[in-house]
Length: 359
Image (cartoon, rainbow, N blue to C red; front, top):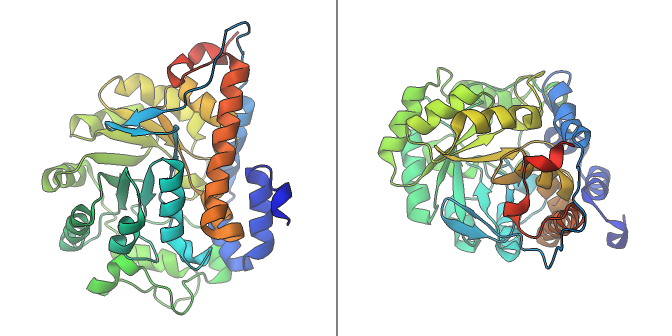
């Protein structure tokens, strides 16, 4: 597809699907079981309507916001997603550079195809590291210490994956990393490759390595063993957000893992207001899942999120055009948010509030 007609995220998705091998496309695009939550995430934002203000005297828009004390150019951040070298050769380094050039937050997945030290050396600021809790806590502690040494500025603990939700596309494709690609951050401790099994190699890897009895004691342990702020990702309930904050989490991400874990979990836009109400000012709140337009970002902020994270759209950008493709996706969402703010009567991010979502 000609780059001149790639006008929006959906265009990049279509172009990426035409370019990627089918098993990679299924891995990036698929969800759990019947993929109900996967679809609902995006549809939920579409259902919300904007009751825009007129005659608001809107001047030049200022999209800047602050996350954990650091300024970013817009409330659109790069979510942690695995295996970027399935999308393009330079993988996570391309993503980090795209986020740096956009002046926004980059979160590196622990399941990256490139070692964190290489990626963070190319990244701007802020840059955070996403973490799973392994059965062997010494492995987890080592990852945290390496992330600190490499310049990570926060640890993002994913809590909605004590096991892997069944992704039937991956099972049918017997998905595993191709020859030459590894889970690079875990290679030094012998956890860099997926087993060869019938069905999903990733599911077998998670079953063999991730702590299945994940509990709040693990969050408490993590907060005690790092000097970095801890962000809890994968929250679906207000009480879990509140408890996380009480144990020391500085932020939570309302997320259902992109519809890839528990199918029929609610869309994140449905959960977000309840988490905001329960957490109050105890911690910052972000949201991901189905963000495909700048107007979705505006709606998320109106519901109480400080910022959003985008995952799949970045992968589609990488697949189509590497670093430039990922950068283009971020600029599309920035432009659309700017336009939505203009047409809704908002000059700054602080002008966006819940009144825009009701008559």
